[in-house]
Amino acid sequence: MLRLLLIEDDERRHDRFKEWLPSDVRLVWAQNAGTALGMLKRLEPGEYAGILLDHDLEKRTMTDDGAHFNGGHVVDALLKRRPTERDIPILVHSMNANRGPGMAHRLAEAGYPVTRVRMAELCRERFLEWLEELREE
Image (cartoon, rainbow, N blue to C red; front, side, top):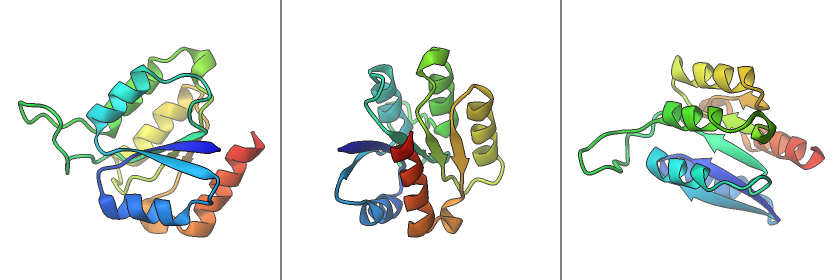
């Protein structure tokens, strides 16, 4: 069974991805960047077939002092991984017109296989195409 890590604070988007999933794919949901950062620290090679990454994750505060982490912090953590561990495909679906492309660019420059599709343009068919690419790797 394939596992995907969804880093997204919007429950409606989570539900949409879940509706699109084939029965042999499991979605693991990190509802904020803080949770995602903790999961990435423990990430084992091959644990996830891919990552679905948003930038704006402010809907859920995860620190006592009210600090908001975002997808950029997740990218920073991914960039700290060894180059040999940068083979996990990432779909950046952020609607943020500046930060979304910036995250995708930074990840691609570091060697990650990255696809950038804004959530408003992402349909079930396009998502399943991306998923099929994961299966082929």
